[in-house]
Length: 311
Image (cartoon, rainbow, N blue to C red; front, side, top):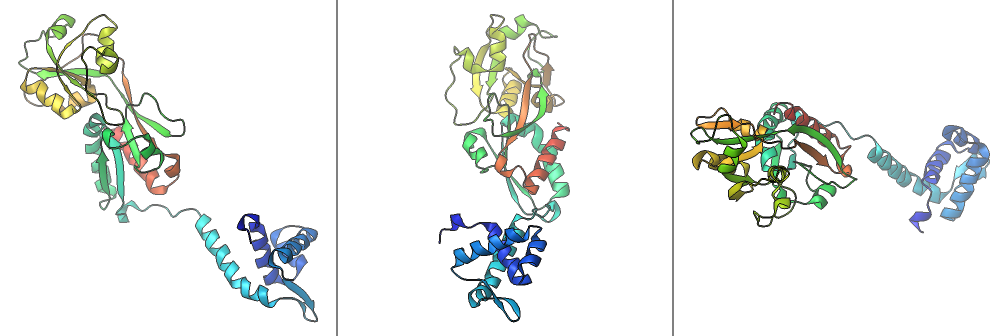
């Protein structure tokens, strides 16, 4: 028997027919016409190679084969109905689930402290596994291998769900004793030495070339638009490293303002507005359509959205 040829409605009709032992009453139970139920009985007989119901002096009675099949098919229908029911709501207080989140260094530095506070308050048993952009790719997100990715994305597959978490401007971070003009001028900025920090995307990165402006990202593209170029002494993919070097080596780190503000109130740090225009960036949360309706994931997304308001 080819299962592809079996109409699920026939199994439902079989269950009702054996319970009612009457075509008309069975039809009424399923809210279909008596001829339609008679047609279902005929199809069942052809499918099972058995009369299923036969007329006796005591009315219609199931055959021996039908009686043996009845409890098995009833269990199948019950299990299928149970499987298709709405998934139970998620109970974060009782959960011990592990969530995997890809976050750029910048997103992780700014978002994780408030997110962890929210998670600990509501779901003390939950664990977060924070992965870097080089650990995963778009296929991992699409397949639900990781729960979400948080970063600046220039291009995204159309199938992904996405939510803008925040927009950010840029700031310049350096040591408070750095002999830069105050307020910072374009001339002073170009005279300084700089640490470059990556606009991290997916996949393993490659080495940087100071002459390749198109690959240097937001800051250097903005400078190129006014025919200027900064003196980059060090390239790093880590925002924390960039901010530390800005302090220890009198370098200037030009980076998203929410990251720079983490260090703004620490001793011997100075934060300045860039002396040229740099377009704002958007930080998005993206996730797979495969887990869009999963209750625990809906809960996690809401925590991320709430945490982003605190950044």
